[in-house]
View 1 (spheres, helix red, strand yellow):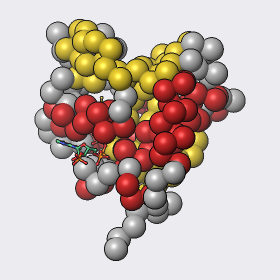
View 2: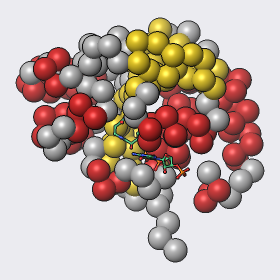
View 3: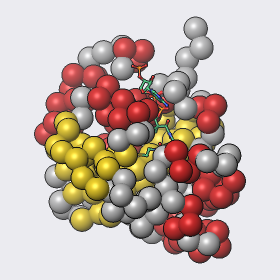
Amino acid sequence: MNVLTVSVRDFQASDIQKQLDYWYRSPAGYLESIGVDPARLPSESEMAANLAKVCGKSEIPAVTILVNQCAIGVHLVAPVVRGESAVFHAHIWDASWRGKGVATRSYPLACEIFFKRFQLKRIDFKTPLQNIGAIRVKEKLGILVVGEEELATPIGRSGLRARCFEWTLSEFENFQRVNRQKPENQN
Ligand SMILES: CC(C)(COP(=O)(O)OP(=O)(O)OC[C@H]1O[C@@H](n2cnc3c(N)ncnc32)[C@H](O)[C@@H]1OP(=O)(O)O)[C@@H](O)C(=O)NCCC(=O)NCCS
């Protein structure tokens, strides 16, 4: 059996180029398909500078997803209200790693870090309705649907509807208790 070892670690400078390639050199039509308006992206040099700042923070709001120790994507929280809540984002850079069960394992690993790091009571997820894969991940993890709203992010397409999910700390801890008892491949 081909076992994937999924882990996360803090986002670091060596990940910046992969993140830039994802945002600026993904296949045509990809960003639109996940609800992003490419015209709203900052310039590449601006994004590179922002990512360098993220790496320099004492509490980094981003973790890199590793499969068999290889960096393949990122989870980040923005905005963050310390002691309260944060909005979670996920991007697997390389299409060949999507749809292989990585996110189902990496979301809880990243959430555990962000809950502790920012003393969050809740993590929010706002997923464009057409993003079936991203919605399915939350359904599989049992993350609660709390409504629907028009997405208002700096880079999102106008008029996009999103399904809103939330994981409260107590629901997340309950998820962890239940899943710790399951063998790795039953996620
Ligand atoms: C969305 C994303 C994070 C999901 O991660 P993933 O590792 O591909 O998801 P998984 O492989 O763990 O899949 C979980 C479930 O979703 C389903 N799924 C994943 N991608 C899918 C797709 N494009 N269409 C339909 N179902 C999909 C899987 O089949 C699986 O369900 P199943 O076990 O019932 O078959 C990843 O695909 C990604 O980075 N996509 C591009 C960026 C993006 O859309 N980010 C989210 C913005 S809100």
